[in-house]
Length: 104
Image 1: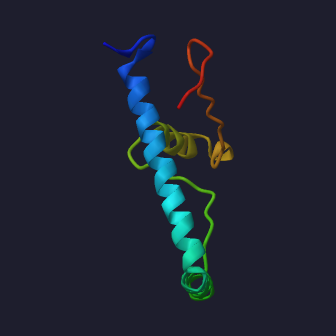
Image 2: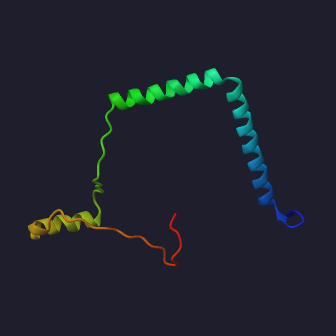
Image 3: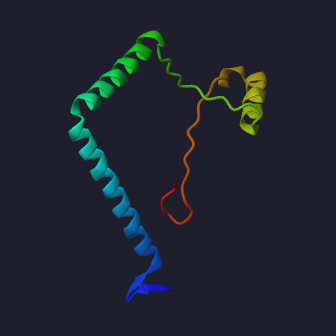
């Protein structure tokens, strides 16, 4: 499993991928420097397209989330029927890992 003394193959592959990424970034930077006018023109078109979309398609922000058919929705419907004063309540959901670690 060892590729070179003290290094595993996965570490060697990771180094190779990083080298490929840095080479690709170098090539992109060289292209952009050599064709600065074209790159700026493309960025200008992208910015204008985004601005045109923002003007023509007004974003709507929603703060509600509905998941039909869930048990909690059924409980809230029953609660609304039996205790109208408690209708429209909100809740907070907290999710934690059992070992106290990260949840990704």
